[in-house]
Length: 79
Image 1 (tube, rainbow, N blue to C red):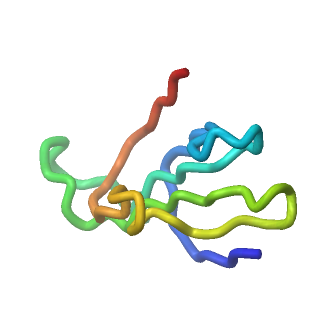
Image 2 (cartoon, rainbow, N blue to C red; image 1 turned 60 degrees about the horizontal axis):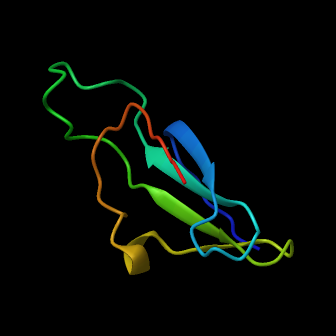
């Protein structure tokens, strides 16, 4: 399993590993949006939760290069 404490602004369900199991990408946010829409500082980290064949999730954001911190307002995924 995987336990995280995040302030999230968006969630995408996608199959990152192409194994047929839904993975989760969680956009890091914060309690308050930035005062300037172009200033993304102050947000929390993103999370990429890889589904372990229905037995829980493993956090892989750093490994995948998407863990960057900054206030996010949404995400999109396409196949």
